[in-house]
Figure (cartoon, rainbow, N blue to C red):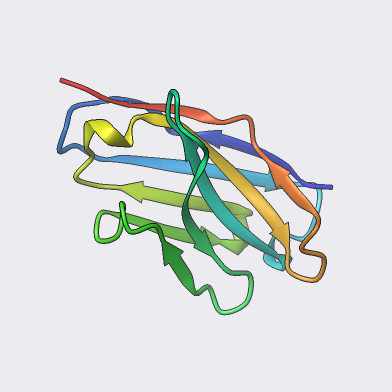
Length: 119
C-alpha cells in the first residue's frame, strides 16, 4: 500500500512556471514507476509524464514535451513535475500515481492538486 500526497499547485500566469511535488509513504518508493496525470474540466484524464523505477527513464505527452520535466528523489520518496512555459490549456487537476514495477496491477493515486493558468 502506498499513500501519495501532492502539493505545489496554484494560480499562475501564462508563460509562468510551477513545480509539483508528490511524497510517497507506506512502501519502497524505488520499486514504483511514478506518473503524473491531469484532468481538465470536461475532458478525460491524460497521462502527462512517467519516470520509471529502474534507471529513471522518462516519457512525456506530446502536449508537454519540451516544457515539463519529471524527476524523482528516491532518498526523499518524492517525485517532481517541473512545469515551464505554462499555457491556459494546462489548467487541470494534476494527480500523482504509483505503479509497482513487479505488480503493475497495483496502482495508487494521490488526491490531486489544482493548477490554473490564467491572466
